[in-house]
Amino acid sequence: MSIENKKNPPLYVAIYDKLFKLINEGVYPVGSKLPSEPELSKMMNVSRMTLRQALGFLKEDGYIETIHGQGNFIKQNMNVKSVGLEKIDNTVFQCCTETIDDIDAYVDVSFSDDYDYMKKIFNHDSAVMIRFKRVYKCKNKVVAQAFTMLPSETASRYQMNFNDLQSVLKILEEDIFTLIHSSRIEIKFTEAILPPLHHELRSNNNLFVLLIENLCDSMGNVVLKNKIYIPIELSSIKINRINKLP
Image (cartoon, rainbow, N blue to C red; front, side, top):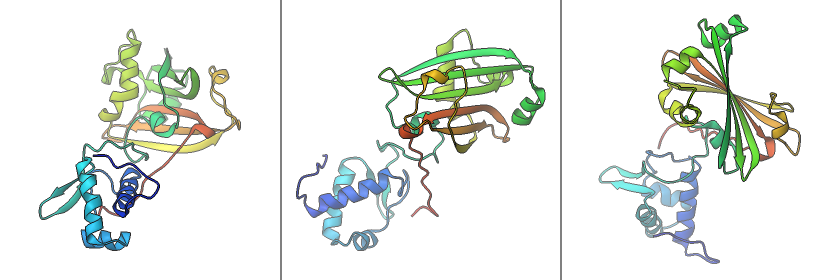
């Protein structure tokens, strides 16, 4: 059962909406425990009966589950959009507000021309540098760009076949985020983006969010580096932070 907002909704519907908002915004992450019913009723300033009605509908809609003797927990299969960068996932999709429906990809394989720079980033010598560029579109409008740099060793490690561009695209856009151990993201703002795709991406304010992302293995070594550009007006960067799970 889904609860729809009405002009003057019952009180339990308002409580349902408040709790759903807290869950959806990551205040109570998937797998975490909600405060006890006495605590929640006090927080929401409602009776236990009203609270239980709201919790009942949240449970019916599949957002929470009750474990006997333990309390109410946010379900693992809850279908709400993640709004934070705390979960390792495709950073472009996490930070771009537009719905991406197409990706153009370009690959360039060349001998490394700066061994010191490569060693500084990837912590080992590499003779071959691979640059992978993507243009993200929404209804044929370019809304983001990404430039990936990786050594040939990373391509071998993750079995990238550059004769099959679609399979490489799937690895870089999906699979890699489940295969890596950790990532580091630096957030900057810039008025310029890297050539040769400069003419395709536009910003109303001539300002772009620049996300510099290093994806790392279990030893902390960088396996690939992403530079992501999103027009400031099409970006949303959120990080949900809590001291501890309830």
